[in-house]
Structure formats: structure tokens, C-alpha cells
Image (tube, rainbow, N blue to C red):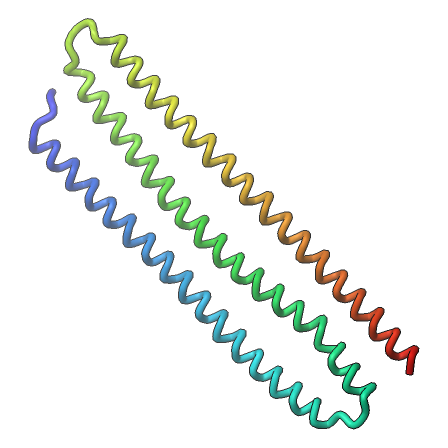
Length: 193
């Protein structure tokens, strides 16, 4: 059985439809991420506005410098923690989006590679006698390229995971140190009074 123009057209049409579907899925994934970031930003802005209003009211009620200093010190830790929580939420959205897009494109690449291999096999069936060595060399090159891609993708994923773990550890340490330093300054202020 040889490749006919009708089979070729059908294959191209199927690949175009699959590409459009993948593109639509990727667009929906990205729009979902934009929606989540927008919701996070609105929530953060609302919370910041409410906290600012509360702070202004507390500031208006301050009667002595010591109370003002304590009020300001009380804002350090929660403010830093909120900033870190915001960064973590953005990181989570980014990682989930990256993972979804990676899965989508890996599935597409895997399907495309399988179809490409099947098309080559069909083509090679009609190869002239004596071309077996060239056919095997071509198949070996394709398998090698596929293996290299998979290895590179695995290393990139491991690197991203390690980087994420390191960022989370550094963030936790920064929050812990900020809390300790805030307590130490608060104690020093109270002792000085």
C-alpha cells in the first residue's frame, strides 16, 4: 500500500485540527492563569486598602511616641508575610500554568512523533531494495533525537523543581529572621522605655 494524495491530505487536515485544538487549549490555560492573577491582584488590593484604613485609624488614635513605634513595629512582620504569600501565590499560578502547558505540548509532541514514525515506516515500506541500512540509520537518528529531547526535558524539570524548593526554603528563612528581628527590636524598645 503506498501513500496516496488523499491519505496525505487527510493526514495534514488531521494535524491542522489537532494543532488548532492544542492552540485553543493553550490559550484557555493562559487565559485561566490571567484570570487567577487578576483575582489575586484584586484581592490583594482590597486587603491592602482595608489594612491601610485600619492603620490610619490606629495612627489617629496614637497619643505617645512609644505607641507609634509599637504600631509601626507591629506592621513589619505581617506586611512581609503578606508580600511573601502574594509571591507564593503568583509562583503557584505560574508553576501550575507551566505544568499544564508542558503536559499539553508533550502530549502533542508525543502524538506527532508517533505519527511521524508511522509515516516514515509507510514511506520506508516503499523504499528500493538495498536501502535497509539507510532506513535503519534514519530510524536510529529519530530515536536518538527523541531520547535526547526527553533527557533534556527531564533535566529542565528537575532544575525547575530544585529552584522552586530553594526559593521556598529561602523565603521561609527570611520570614523566620524577620520575625526574630522584629521581636528583638520590640524588646529593645520596651526595655528602653
